[in-house]
Image (cartoon, rainbow over all chains, first blue to last red; front, side):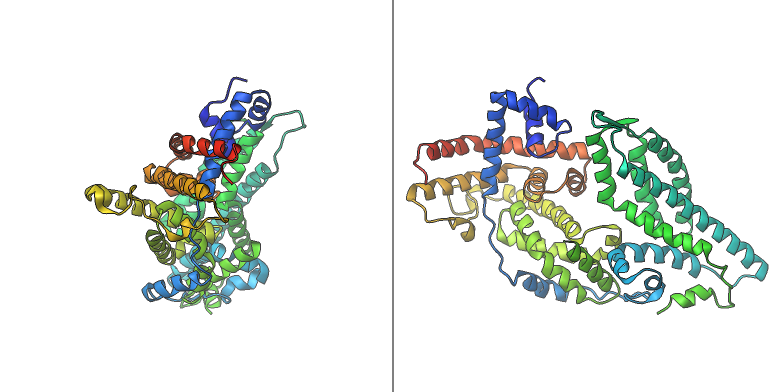
Length: 270
Length: 208
């Protein structure tokens, strides 16, 4: 290997180089590059010794005292913490972990959809219920398929220890197909004003784009990069949570529409 | 760590449900970390404290957007980085308009008393060298652009990933990578002679 340039050595020092083993092997044999790396390390190590004043154990309390009077009152939501339909179907431990992510997305999606209903004629109500269930089922299945692709990417690896590249052409191809569907559902959710679902589908689109635009064969480092991007967005978890809820909604008996709105809406209130 | 994330999620949800005091838990838990980042970015305690307060105020206002985020600590860290960049740009523009001899000292750099405390009983030589190096390091950091300084602080002190830095800089990942590289390159150019001299002094036994 030719000598790595300064940028590659700095990236190597920061743990960012894709072919680390190649650079590492070169460094073993090249005293010049080792010396260069040591000089980089010396500067960064010196910078690492720059002290930061210790703000004190009570610093957090002081910050709170300073900002508390400036915080506006937040209007409580009707699905306030600990109550509401979401607490019923998730075990407490899992609910706590999901916390902010799941509640906002799912409730915004479902409540938004349900609250938009006006008292329809019985025939119209039936047709509307059917359409809603079909849509919920379709989005749920879409999220299930997306989840599967992301999980498979998470588990992908070289076929054997000698192989340096991983073939992800199947995941890539499926991501391309899912992209089209995703855009369609996102558009529908947007038209219905379901911003929570729009946000999840937006994030999913970015991840699917990443996968669809990846090479058919990636190095383990490139694969790790893709995984990191998936992990950093927490998208798999969000997809799973919303997908599960939609699945349950699709499997539950059709709601009976009352004169003044949805019975589920009544159940949702705390 | 998991327990903290777990309890952060509860505090976020309670705050969103209208319990303002739940936000206090988040402020008290994450303030010091955010302060460290802000201090390294701004280089002085006054601005760092302002960044911390503003970061939590903004986090509170945008908390409903946090629903899509995985880790409150990382999220508020990024808000602080965003605000600190704006603050540094504003500070640089104010400094550029001011007379050069505005502040005391030969280098115009604010001295934080805590940063002058040595880590062990020093010899006069060592104290002088450490102090001199610290002055050079502050000056070198001040010479970085706000984006470079942010990228450097997040990467080398905050341990942030390139994507996170790109997000804070509102740039692509390749641009963020390049900014990190440029910052290290500039710091090398400014500091290597002093770091090497110190290394040689150490090797010769003139530094304790």
